[in-house]
Image (cartoon, rainbow, N blue to C red):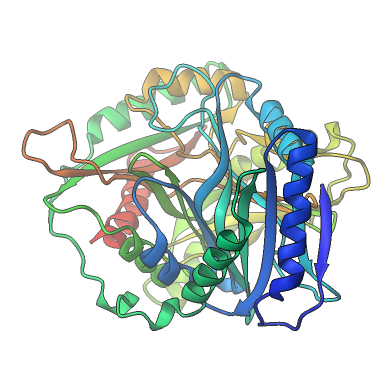
Length: 485
């Protein structure tokens, strides 16, 4: 990995001569090494809306990734793949780590000198399916890609990162001109006629209700196994398919989600084949910034009240519920034990807090740990996935029972999605409260309709009530449905 620094001022395009010399040096290295090099060029720009950029530059047949946390005033978008890898097998996290390491060995990084630019440098975007093996998913077990274009903001500053391949035959002058033109288009994306306010939603066919009796029967069967001490907790999910006569509008759905759920992570991962997995997740798996790891124990839930007093009453019941506290403790114990096994020292408050979202509230314990040891982010992801919040306790038995009771492919549902930069900073979320939308006509029908599959789950422990768990599932699915309308 080679690093160079730009001496020009913030919000200016790089000096043509300096960048030209940088790319020539990169090309010379390609000639000497006998392999293609990657040039990663970071440019500060005024803040832009990544969804406006996605609407202009995005396509259904390209890898894409989007993650926004409006409450923290930051977002990141990746469009198209300069390089990518799709992996299978139970060692997918280790192999993904090796892939990133190998890519970085041939990466040249151009940064702003003496400036702290958020989201600068190459970022590798990763998504993993819930199960590593034997699932007929539109996504491979692991996907890692370095985007051609990355657009991000934190607070009021924006950054564009261009990642381009450089080999002995590339025309540097033409490459430079293409970069300048594309960066200029990104800077002015919000002034294009296709602004977000012009988006229209697609007509859809009313969804069929979920098979309530089948779900409640699965809950009853799981409770019988819990009573027999076969396992302590299992998370059972359900899925509902809805169909539209027109393609679902990806940008419209994401904009809806961020408006409705400003305190959740709004996300989207695209496989380059027309399938997009999106949602509004309250659950961070891990975040690492400047060697500080932050993760969350999030389990135990209750609805929001229609009035302030009713809302407080629901919250007090949640805090005082022995059943919900037990479910939360499973997750907290699991995370702290797994982090300790990596040599980390997790720190957290002794009692859970309430995390109040727009339509639901949860028991929440934030956990921190300093990364004094050389632990790769994907080592932590592998250690934590799947947590009891999305699988159960013990993990292996719970996963086996999930396969038994769930009649659909989880794909990316409840799985890790996120990014890792060249310095080891990262952000991974858990893909819950989510939907898989297909821009290709559905093979399930013969009338050229388009399908969206909505996912939601509920944790089952001793004392769970099948009717209440079904109500929780329906509440989560309804929030997703509204975003697609």
